[in-house]
Image (cartoon, rainbow, N blue to C red; front, side, top):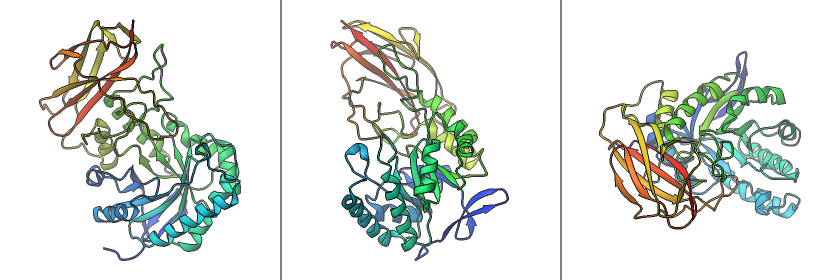
Length: 406
C-alpha cells in the first residue's frame, strides 16, 4: 500500500483531455456514494464520490483497501439554506474549515480530486459564491500540488460556464449533474465554451422534474427495468461518446434514499438488494454480462390500465394489479407489494425527505402475476409498489400512482 499521495494530473493530448494518476491514464468509472464498495469493484468501477467530509478518513481507508479512489467533497453551504456569500466573516470561516480538511487528507493515497461544492448554483442569486469557490480552489492548489479541483453544478448553462472561467479560474474540472438532458451535454460543453476537462458528477434515471405526471400532478417513475436501459444508453451516448473533453463520471445514487419515492434514484433498495441498473453498469464498465441478472418487468397494469395512466379508485373499493416478469437466468421469483401515500415531504436539490409510512392490511390476494387490494379509506394520492426478487439479491421494482376518491 502506498504510504503517500499519488499524483493526479490533467493532460491535453492531440485527441483530447485525459487524467493521469501515478503517470498512467485514469478514466473514472465512478459511484456516487460510499456504500457497497465491493460491488463497485465487482461491476468494474474504480472510484467513489462524497459530497462532504463526514467519515472522510474511514471512507478513504476503505476505498484504498478496495483499490478505489475518492473524489472528496467539500460541502459549500447553500444560499437557499440561508448562507450569505456576501458575509465575509462567514465565507472566511468556511474557508478555514476546508483548509484544515485539505491539510489532513491531501496526502492520502486514495484521494483522486477535490469536489469544491455541489450545486451551489441551485436557486441562487449571489454571484459572490464563485469568488468563494475560487478562494477554496486556490487554497487547495497552494497546499496540495497533487490533486485537481472540481466544481459541481446543477446542469449547465452559458452564464455559469463564463462565471466559473472568469471568477474561479483555479477550478480544473467542471462537474455537471445531469439526468434526462445528458444526451445534450457534449454539445452544450462545446457551445458554451468550456475549454477544460469535465466530468458527469451525477447521472442516472430521468429526474422526477423531467417526467410526465398524472392528472393530479404525481410524477410517473420509470420501472427499474426501464432505468437499466436508460443507464446503459446514457453511459454510451452521454458519457463515453465524448472522448475529447469528458474524463469520466459518477453514477447516482450508489445506495438508496427517499427522494419523491424510496426507489427513484438508488441503484440499491433499502434492504441492499441490487436493481437492474447494476447489471447495466457492469456491462458498461466491464464490457461483460454479470453472473446473475435482475428480473425484468415487462408490464404492469392497474385496473387493466397500463403504466402512465391516471387511475382513480373509490374509498373501500377493490383494485387489481397485474405484472408480467421475465427472469433472464431462470431463477424462481418472489413478489412483494406495498402501498404508500404519495410523499408530501418533497424538497429541492436532494435535501433529506421523510419516507411515507407503508399501509398494511389492504392486500387481499396475490400470486406471481396478479394482486387484489382494497383502496385506502382516506381519499388522496397513493402509490402501489411491486418488488420482484430472484432469491440472489437482485430485484426489479416499479410503482403505479393512483388516486382515491370519496
